[in-house]
Structure formats: C-alpha cells, structure tokens
Image (cartoon, rainbow, N blue to C red; front, top):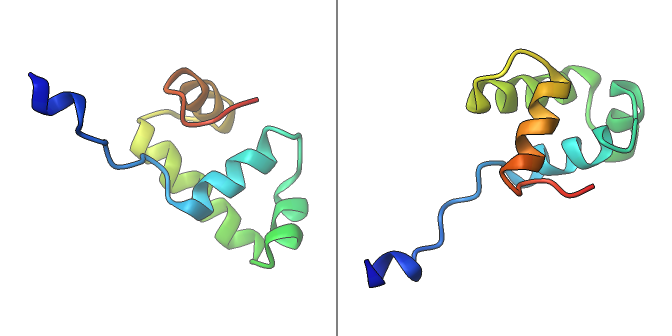
Length: 75
C-alpha cells in the first residue's frame, strides 16, 4: 500500500498528443493545430484518433471531457 503512494503512473498522453488537445480545447481547427505545431493535418488527426482509442471514446468532444475528468487536461 505504501509503495503505491510513490508510484507515478505513466502519463496517458504523449507530449505531442497533449499539445494537440491543449490547442483543441482552445477551439483551434485541425488546420490551425497543424500550422502551430508544424505538422500535417493528417498527423493531427492521427494524434486525436490515437487518443480517442486509448480512452475508448467515439469523438473529439468525448475525448476532451474524459481527459478533463482524468486530470490529463486543464481548461
């Protein structure tokens, strides 16, 4: 039990996935996010899709709600 208190769980999101969702909650479009992070729109969609799969949700907004609930994302 005591050992668990010192266990730091692996973050759910990669650094890039987190960056994508931080911009997504600022109401940025896929194109805006791609431009800001210097990646393609397809890559942005892949990051969003990978995150939705990790969370077991079916949409971007559901993913945002779940990430907020888990404390992985702040508004």
